[in-house]
Length: 447
Length: 131
Image 1 (cartoon, chains in turn orange, cyan):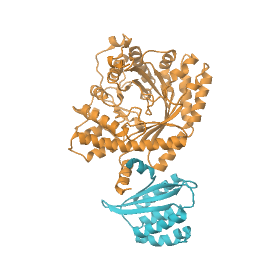
Image 2 (tube, rainbow over the protein chains, first blue to last red; image 1 turned 135 degrees about the vertical axis):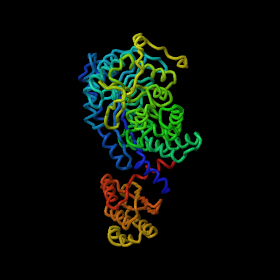
Image 3 (spheres, each protein chain N blue to C red; image 1 turned 60 degrees about the vertical axis):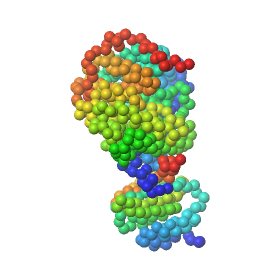
Image 4 (cartoon, rainbow over the protein chains, first blue to last red; image 1 turned 90 degrees about the vertical axis):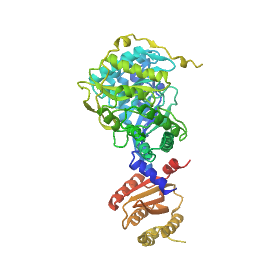
């Protein structure tokens, strides 16, 4: 092989922060359902600690052998609202605890799936799970939660939207970090390896390995070589880079699935930033030619980036899934933080960006006194964008008690830090309090 | 062609190293390959060394590999943008050798020699650059 190609790979890993963001083992808990919740929890613990017992060791072996960092080893499970419903317990804290214990026993970074899918309505388990969310998020360490409140096929469950606004506010009062572990989705995907929104869909195999790649730093470096060239050249460069990055995800997933004796699911092609210098999606957009992310033109640049990442990655692996695109979390991206601090990026622009990127309003700190109805309205807006555009959207906002606009909040680690952002102060409570269902859009009737 | 591989590594092989001659190294490596291929399952890895040029880099790396009985299949060395750049294709036995320890040792050796040394399974490079 040519020296130059070998060195290119070495540079991507050493200097440009190329990594595998996560190997996530999806585990179905459908066979753990029991009308006795103690028995169900024991079955859950046993299944997770059996199936995932080698996950961390194998991940570390691959890291050492291939010399590529694998930042997270994670587990996703079947939405707990489905598993716990048979028990008729009054709250599901016990289920949250057992997930936390199992995750700690096998040494993973996070476990996702304390989830409910309520896009059209609630079954008994959904209601109980949503009620349990603030306590579970506050009193467990590794458990991540998600609630799907809408979909293109079924519309938006506005009762759930209203309730989730209240849950976000209530959870924030228990601990500021709780909401970093919870995502509210529209069109949630069932094979997403990324947290906090990962869960193992009911249509999935019993156990599966999914991989999430990363690499905004690599894309930025590649774009530095095509300064001033037309946008189609920029798109082509991104595609080529995404292809290479995804090939690495495919390799790691294939090796992990072979060593764990578990079938390989999907590669999620996402460009996931971290607070590290040079690992920023915002800086990729700025490299395309924006003075600072958030200015006019940002949406166009992001649309092209998101599409080119998908096109490049899709041929590089056997199966693509998850969210696959560019993430724009504010607190996890140094360029986004700078733009907010400079007054050039606000929530309204971020909302526009979510119409063309792969997820939604992500890791955004807002004042602690933001009304629950306003948070519900933000969720409704995002869900509407997802529903109408046939795409996944999500909300992960963090109300920070006592904080004012402009204050800086430290989340730590990969979650970074975030400036508290201004929220529109006019109320939407009359609409939110209507509840009910926003009907599915006309283009959902495809049968 | 009936060398004893261990003796060759300890004695003859090192004698060639101060010359840092690619041709001679390649020849010696081919011989080593013949004699070390004893049926043990092996993994092909690429060892990259990049940094400021100085005396003894190839000697240091090769000496370490020889001690670990890691066979060198191919070597290329050049000065690229002013930096010493060496690529080695090596065969690593997958049994009886702790690859993580080897990778750590080589990183430490790199620090001592003032260069960055990485060893990675060759499949990584194949996956990224070849369909």
